[in-house]
Image (cartoon, rainbow, N blue to C red):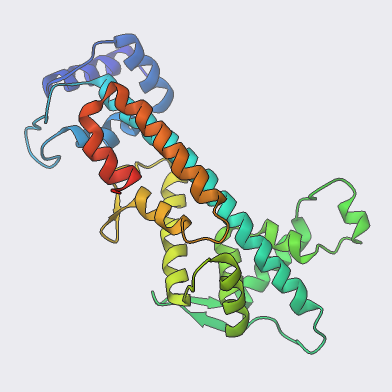
Amino acid sequence: MSAKKLEQEISYLQHIGVTVSDHQSFTRQVKAYGYDEIVSQYLPHFVVDPRATPLQLKRPTDFNDISDLYWLDQHLKNTTMIGLQLFEQSFKVTLSRKLRELQQDKQQAELLKPSYQMQNGRTIKRGDLKARLRHIKKYYLEPYPGYREKTSGKPSAWVLVKEMSFGIATNAFFLLEQPVKKEILQVVFQRPCSLISFEQTTADLRVFRGRAAHNYRLIGLRLRHHSIYPLVLAELSLLTNQDPFIRVSQQLQKVCEHYLISHPEERTFITNNVVGRK
């Protein structure tokens, strides 16, 4: 990025009233992570109406205030993603165990239904899933050295499910027979969970994971009229395995309290959009 472009961006921020007290920090962060990633995504939080012209700041704002919010969101995303990975692992283990049981049942000729119609209108097809499974069987990674020789090149249900993305794993789940799906949900969740509820949960988690993977802003985002961090946290709290919920909730609280030391004026925003009201 040219020095001229950096000066233009600093000039624009100063024009709308944002101070840039540390030009060196601004230059380093914008060069490393991008102006749009930091300013374009997080500046709207500091203005009265992001659609208005000219922009009006809610209060005196420095670039460091904007970048602090950016870094807060990075820490929150990473913490939450770890919890979602732990949930995914628990779900996949339960799914692979059930698939292994079904495979051992000689009377079970076909484990999967031809298709499943979701509430949002999307149709999951057995043929699509099987095409993905054929690819996994051919290109799967060894979970440990010597696995291929030990299994004669035939991956177990554990490895097949392990190699699936979360989306593919949930597709496999939805194609199972109704009693089997009910058994899996009874293991995964500590209270009764309907298929419709599980569809909604997986849809919410896909939104979070997709936006996090592409580094979009999540703090302040509302999904189904709920702030996304408390929504995901509430969904983790429903699991039988409480470890993801406990780890995420404790770490989110810790990260937010550290942020609020320097930004106490943001406490209401943080309460509403991250930790949720108690």
